[in-house]
Image 1 (tube, rainbow, N blue to C red):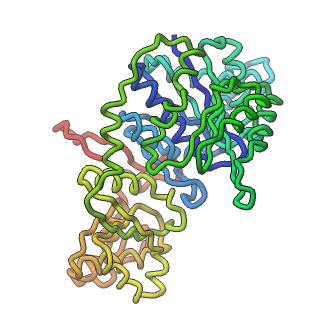
Image 2 (cartoon, rainbow, N blue to C red):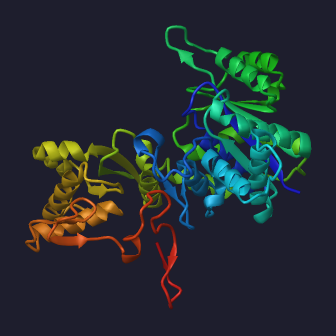
Image 3 (cartoon, rainbow, N blue to C red):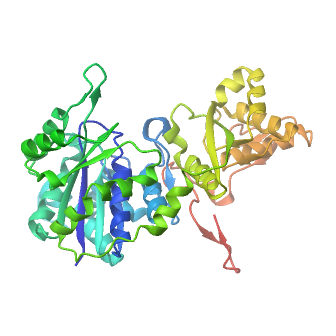
Length: 447
């Protein structure tokens, strides 16, 4: 029977719960277990496809076309296997399914409620993924922080699963923060104490606490957290900043995390084989040269908007013994001040990533043309590649009003246009052809 690790967060968002979740699953995988991750997003959106990347971070597209949370990409990069839309569930999906079931008459005569109907649907999806993948362990991350109103049904579902599955099949791992005030020079444990108190208020007692911080948590701070959070001191795990996120599994293992997990979930002790993983992480730290890449985009104010592109560049650099230094340039600034195109001269290559809409599009088009004229290595992704096509049509083919119909529906030279099957689509969410596709008749993988 599958076992479950439930990851919650406290104090603030952006602590690195996704990386911690992926690292835990990686350690389980390196222990020879079949493990994967699921991300729960409490927002009411059905998926991340219509959300602004500056607010939410990138939309990660799975092989089956799911428009998912960016943490799904983190999981894939750590675990080295493809995930699907089933690995990401949202409040919108849960309520949509329950409401549709009610309309179909499934609950005739009953008052449909948060408990048990919403929590039952949450548990069904969690257990369904574990069963479908024949997992030994499913690591489930709940987005947001403990105390968020929208997270409560999911946390209640976790509580119920603890009651139904037992303590030997479920583990609550809480990620918190120990901030360090520069004027004091001490890592403070009070935020973690209050976060755990909030967990207890809603019926959850953490089994393991992973404490984030700029540096390693001192022994006396661990003891204080252990005392006030009712967690064995050996289950208080320090997770300090490291030079590469791919060092987090080694950090957690060195702190004794897997011993705590094995004690609780009663796994047979196997020797953790870190050799290949250490070889991978070593490539991110050992390099001979630096390559500077300019990223010209419309969401450049938040690097998480392009996290998968950034990681792809870092991975490519690691494979070639190079450190990749990425600089983000706002396409709108290039649009307003064309002289800023000269900034591209100092880079080894230019990337124009994905995006939507007319804002900043002319800046991207001029950047693509500048890179072509200067012979700078150039990569256009999705919308970035489309605008490179527009740039070529205008500046090489002489089609001065060439454009994409997404930007200018009346352009006389629509070098980029909607696919025929998209013309009758009226809804915005989940309607694009995304993910992996098979070319008809050949079996050749395309994406």
